[in-house]
Image (tube, rainbow, N blue to C red; front, side):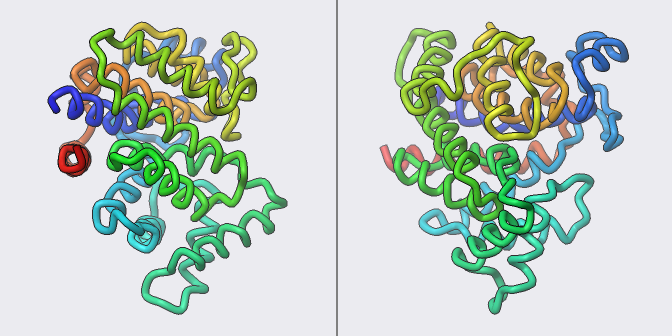
Length: 313
């Protein structure tokens, strides 16, 4: 169980660490990052959002909302997750993606209940997709999808829950497929029982990827990767960062320094890398930059996931 806790904590903290490291670099190109900062390896803060060093953004905030909703109602968490999405959106977050914003606003305004139900969320998501010309294939669902793969012992329940939560805001086939795939990979890593170390798990994750999606998510050279907000591009960047790394730090630094949608790409990478390398391999200097409230919430969510997995084994 100690190893299980290490992987679950690594994955959940990995999302927050990647988000915070990448946030100051969002929308910068690789060249701009190099010219201004060199290779970023520390929590520098700044950027267009003017974040403080170690400050997280919507990637982590929505991840936490998903996790809290799952804990409240594991068997059917949509309403509980949705209530948290609405509360968060109304709080005036520093950043919120356009697709998420439109779907959340639509669900909140058309619901005939205190909290929108699953069908109302799906109708809102469909409305958003139609309104934006069927371009809901951004990475806003993938960025928040780590917790089902950590919490649920059953693979099918984890994957189906992740897909349903994705479709609350992003009614798009590629987005849902990416969330399925990511959850398959995370669940496989968390459940692995081996003594072969991190490199075995890296290859296991990539094998799962290749088996499920084939060539669409094939690994590519760094110069061919596009760090955009399109979910397929973001996932490719995460897989590249994982494949070229030998440590958790290597993976996150590579992902953040690709630029583009740097916070989300690094957060997606961080979830996988954290599951593989574990919490104990995340640099403490990075963990300590997260504010105390965020760390306390992450720790509580880790405890809940470990308790649930232990109880099902």
